[in-house]
Length: 214
Image (tube, rainbow, N blue to C red; front, side):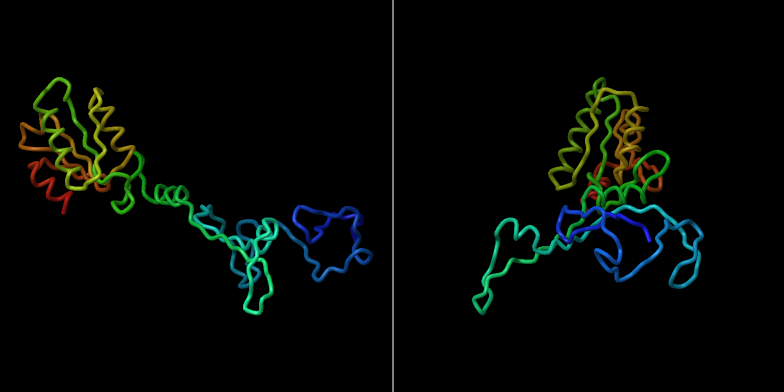
């Protein structure tokens, strides 16, 4: 019963003002529309509606012939007639997909990357390399061995405190954190931390290389 409405004109980007039901057009359906609220009954089954947040990982757009008409793109059919191709767009957003992974795999310390999608397989943390040549040599050697074997490694050789480095390693969340320090060398190798479980152990360098390259 409302007067002087605004309606679409069946053309992209065009609207008509001051249109009236029954005079300018006859609607196929008249409905009352309202925002759904938590607990509202489902119109199909009657069960209460539960609201939840989501992330748009992918999308599908039916573009029709809007763009091909605008570009003047055509093709010849078997009968020789000329037509505009019908276009569609289908895609998965890489950034959105990674956001979903992070939302599902994290803790209070940071990201916990699954091995299959982690930016790096291992995070190599060198502690005291600037003051201990043995640590620097061992860390550089381990990095070279892993990368030569095709293992992706994030190498932290910054001159920062152990606390800063460990915090950053947990925040970035690579599957395996490998720490090389004077203490680990004295204990027989490197300290390996599983980011997901938090389990730590000091192991010989050869064992760590074999595990990460296996």
